[in-house]
Image 1 (tube, protein in one colour):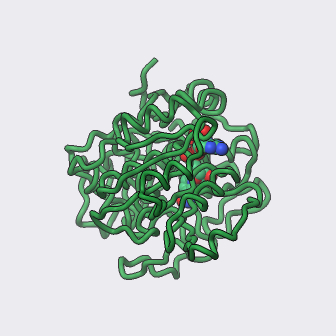
Image 2 (cartoon, rainbow, N blue to C red):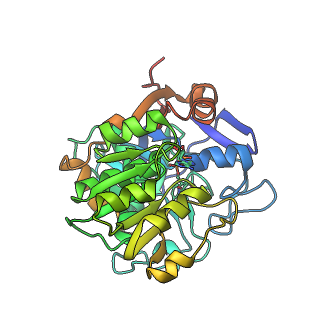
Image 3 (cartoon, helix red, strand yellow):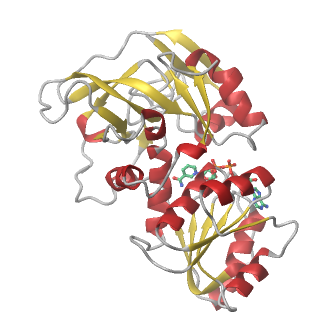
Length: 361
Ligand SMILES: NC(=O)c1ccc[n+]([C@@H]2O[C@H](COP(=O)([O-])OP(=O)(O)OC[C@H]3O[C@@H](n4cnc5c(N)ncnc54)[C@H](O)[C@@H]3O)[C@@H](O)[C@H]2O)c1
């Protein structure tokens, strides 16, 4: 079958490879769509980061490069292994793409399996990937979706789960009131903004790109989209909140000035959730954090988040369709996928790839 294989920095090849073997407790998924994520671009430009090298095997998947890429995937069950009685051929599914050590408790009672040692992802560290015609996945990581969710939209359930978990890390677990400021309206920031809007908050974003501000207003339904070169964002937030400041702040830009703005915009006892994965050590003035008793929290990926994310999409509370900005075939992965996202990221939010030839020319 055809697959996109990561050999190393700037070296991704579309190849014909053997499909994975079906084992007891696993099912084969014919891939419908797989999104390209910023992390894939980091692996291509600066990696390997999560991917193994040809000489150093993944400590958790025990595979070396090349590995198949892709973890934002949706598809249809095409084969079911022994020991699975709650999946059938034809079911529509998405994957929670974890590769964890076998002794980790991955039951729904454990709310920290994503923090276990050597945690890594299908489609980066090994065990196949969504940028191939099909993939074999353990039952635990397969989530059924209703047929009412189109399979292209379903490929966004993985990044939306990142946003849902980030919002939960702020202590927001249901409908609530309050003012939230999101720093950066890239794919992660805009999905966080969508979840906040769905929970009933007033949402503002600060973003340099005009197109991204427009998309945040139109598609994520944010209330305010600020250009930090034009306005003092923290002052605007204080004005809009009767001098109190934002109750919740989310960092999704990996930019020091944004982190500072979020701290300056925060209300006393507000919560700042950092989603950004920093390539450098940010420099900010923490005095306001102390004086306002701001709580800063991290967030990584998701844990038991997929079922509620699927509900958010199935119920129509969040419409992910506007965030799909391209649909391509696997052969065009580098030219029309990676290059577009690297060189014209303003115009692209989520580019989906069809390994089975459903993409648009
Ligand atoms: N925590 C997690 O689980 C998780 C998962 C996926 C991605 N991430 C991280 O989240 C971050 C955001 O991801 P993304 O794909 O949306 O990135 P992105 O680069 O597409 O978006 C960042 C946005 O920030 C904006 N920005 C930069 N400087 C700014 C400034 N001074 N003022 C206002 N806006 C500014 C950019 O214009 C851009 O639109 C990255 O660091 C990524 O690695 C984290």
